[in-house]
Image 1: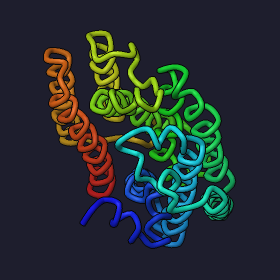
Image 2: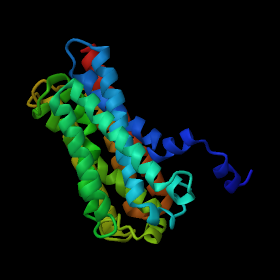
Image 3: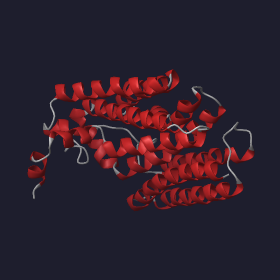
Image 4: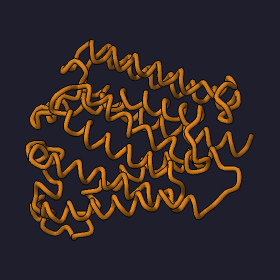
Length: 296
């Protein structure tokens, strides 16, 4: 079956799922669920359900608005040209309406949990759409701004439980914040040529070179260091035991090994390995944090 025929056969629901990047949205919501499970004292399936649903809607709306803004550039890149707006699977007005509805629904649902959960959800959307997205064609510093909304979900579950920003939420934020850089830049390395077609500047030096590779290693080291802080008992109620520390260090050092290999060889294959290793790392340590909380 040709790609053109497959595009013609996509249903409206399928187009909406692609517009909202539903797989990415679910993975982002997973980090919020993890932080809820780390933070809760009295488990509430109702609060957790609201967090999942509201978080999914807010992230999906952000992804959709991003595609609306970048629709002309998406049409130029291989990896994005089959999205709903470049193909005409959704009209511009349809996409705006869908994303607007999801935004209001998502933020309202998060507000039902508490004000600060909705507030951080809104801040995440604003930074993602008003800073990260428009800066992508202008400066590699866009990744810094993109790392902020990318890190908020891992603290959002804790905020849903406590209704406050504290040292615990700050540490959870910083773990995922520093993780964003090697993750983003490994993707940028793999898709560098395609990003150039769309006019995006994703790598810190603008090239697949030592300068970019060094920064990937640098931020990976910071990610590992921040991830181990809860073991040393100065992060409030957020803490982990020795076994969890060892597992986090092993997985972090494995990711650092992949980053160093990329710096040594500077090839696409090692960038792909780092990209998948980074995805494994963040999911793995979130599970470790949850298990440590539940069984300590």
